[in-house]
Length: 166
Length: 102
Image (cartoon, rainbow over the protein chains, first blue to last red):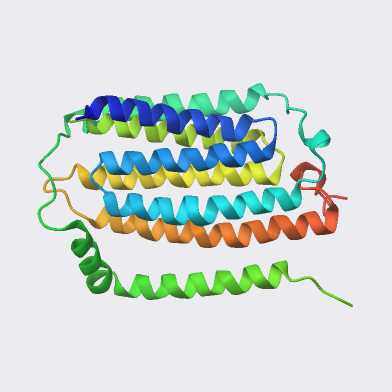
């Protein structure tokens, strides 16, 4: 039986480390693969949070679809390895902005009453049937709109990527 | 049980990494990676807060599912834009794509 805290620490380290590697890797292809690992880490955090259905969706949609799509695009777009392999210099202004934002939000979260939130027991009933009831009952209209958005985005992507032949 | 604050901290760190990428990177694909990282941080927050409500409910997970689907459609359109940019300009560096400036 793996301890929950150990799992949380390991998965968090994997997620954050892969996210940094995704942005700082020398080649964009390696960055795309690291991004897939970061998605996998977030799915692991979902499993630690008892959200197994969302974790499953994260793996199917993000790693199965988005990461593979990104990988294809990287391989189509990146022209020569030589030009890509020189690392961009780290710009100190971006680091300063990110650290300032992180410190401000961490201060706000620390002085808030989030630390007093504690675990109030597990879910009652099945998670999948609960989500299904919510999706078809309370959020049925957003679900329909989401279907329209997905269809429109497929048409838009096809229209954009179409090669015009004279 | 892990306190809620730890999840919020992980989410803040991921968000900051994404903001760092959005501010500094010039390659359009790297900007895309940064956007996906920020979306993942938001999803983590949604699921974590809904888990720690009393009693824990499923609305946050439902919102996370909507968010994942929207991110997928955004990925399709965004990557199509990156591809057409590469086809027209032979480059995906956003700092070299300032055609309206002059």
